[in-house]
Image 1: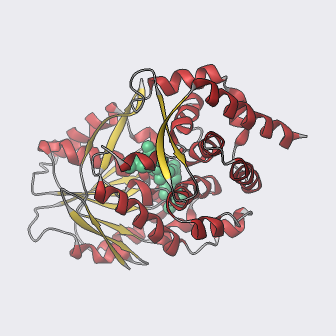
Image 2: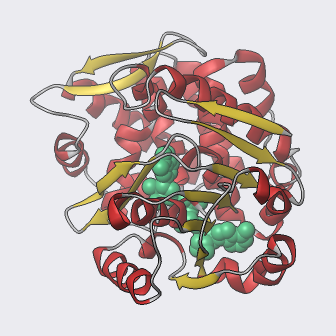
Length: 355
Ligand SMILES: NC(=O)c1ccc[n+]([C@@H]2O[C@H](COP(=O)([O-])OP(=O)(O)OC[C@H]3O[C@@H](n4cnc5c(N)ncnc54)[C@H](O)[C@@H]3O)[C@@H](O)[C@H]2O)c1
Ligand SMILES: [Zn+2]
């Protein structure tokens, strides 16, 4: 299956099917001098052989620490050294093989090495249906997540759902949040269907190729209208304002990105006045085993302090993406007191759940 992402600056395909890597010739430039693969170390151990079998081309390999810990300035410098020592040129193509972390990291390296070289995304997580599309790349600073970055669209995305089979449950949960976020932003029938999934086993057995295709289409439609987040792209932050705060306070990597976003969605639904949706979603998260206890570990003061510091909240106002109803997002300024209240209600749900 092939989808097309159209932005103001580029158009590129997402090839979403078993054996997708074999279609690399569809996305490679007519002329290039070499391929460099940046692979998540853990993913390489699991799927490196299959990757080589499918790619069937020569490449230089640079293994990067697994997951979020890849996205540091130290690794950035080491990777630049690797590229320079290996005489990688502007005619070379960089390939990212792994989840959203390696995609963001390798994408940022590609965006900045010699002022930008082409790159290809080969995602291996569910969450990466979000991160691999849209051209946001970046690394973390000790003072904030994704604080150093660039917009750099890939030549293409080669997405093989077969790789998802080895994901641990926590990563399936994390990715599912971004999929259902796309459903909440766009389509009641689709989100109703996803809301019927209440066991991790049935979640694992979803037809992921179909779900990822729908998610990518929602994201693509938004990015097509607003590549650089001047307007509607903000909607993609649904659940993220509160979620990012939890993720940061827990320490990056400890609470998975999507797990934090899932919890952030409960708060978002309360702030939107969608009470029933908030409690239903909370119950679903509980049945699926999301780490809901996290919200009891931080005070609302700590959370609000982080939200104010977050780059998307300049000035005194705290902006949230809310829903009029499923499929109808809008951006609104929210009073601190309302956030406090929504947080308290979430904490109460967690406490009730314990008894
Ligand atoms: N650029 C964007 O628009 C955007 C959007 C959303 C998220 N992100 C970023 O994406 C990152 C999160 O991505 P992620 O959730 O994919 O996490 P990740 O890349 O950190 O991967 C999570 C873990 O799963 C492992 N893994 C990956 N694929 C696997 C597989 N097939 N089988 C077994 N294990 C596997 C990795 O080694 C890692 O330990 C965050 O850094 C976030 O900021 C970016
Ligand atoms: Zn996200």
